Amino acid sequence: MRGTMGYLAPEWISGVSITSKADVYSYGKMLLEIISGIRNSKNTKGSHDGRFMFFPVWASIKLNEGEILSILDTRLEGKADMEELDRACRVACWCIQEHEECRPSMRLVVQILEGVQQIGIPPIPNHLVGILEDESTVFNSDSSLICDSEVGNKYPTV
Image 1 (cartoon, rainbow, N blue to C red):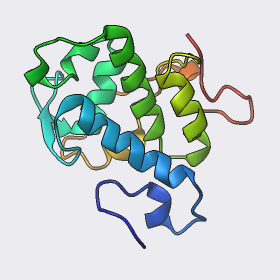
Image 2: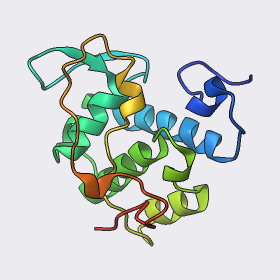
Image 3: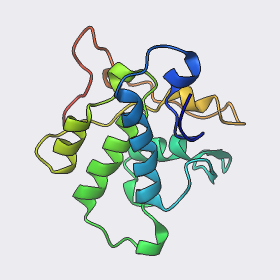
Image 4: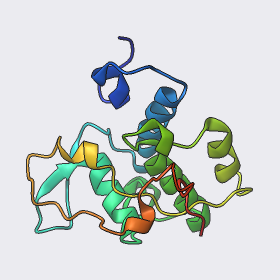
């Protein structure tokens, strides 16, 4: 096994074949840190009953709630292009999906970040929820956002 704890894709731990999508996962975790200025290993005070939750889960919930500005590094004082911030948050949260077939390729990541390709809001990465100390987190139950490679609905567009 190689890599830094907190950035390793789930497949490294589960022992299945490693593909380039493992690096996509790590990129997503790093992108969340760049956007927020917060280490992905930190707990963050959540919006649900004031409980603490694992930062990537909190960021994904905020994205699903449409509160992307709350993910942005507070030192930027809200001074960001909201369209670019939205794209970056969506990409980061798609990249940290548990199943590698649900993660975009780096080519698609670049296209999305450049604004050439659009992508829908990803589901909350449920595998990260297990890291939470509090099991009462609210989950996204919108089935249209679930990665389903058999149906070809991996990346819903907006």
